[in-house]
Length: 89
View 1 (cartoon, rainbow, N blue to C red):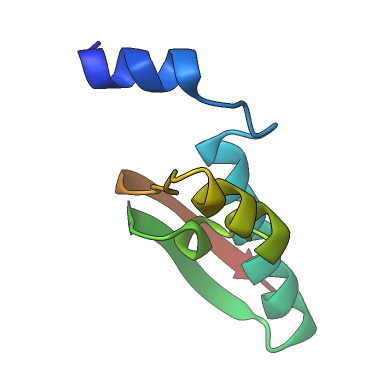
View 2 (cartoon, rainbow, N blue to C red):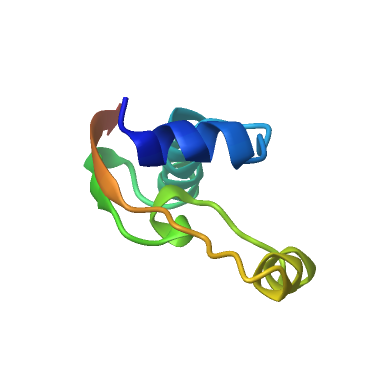
């Protein structure tokens, strides 16, 4: 593991969920929308995460202001490559 990642792990704060949890929440949200609408087949995927919203993560204004007031930044970037096919009859 690179020095930067070691520093992140030591100095970071656990958010209470993993990246996979966030992606699964995104998929569940999309499936719920599909269930309410037309039936059919839908392919859902996350290839690259560039913002928290790409992984269905919302950072509240209070939390965002706290983080930035400490001269810290929020980074959510990198490959995800997770896919799901939904078939509703």
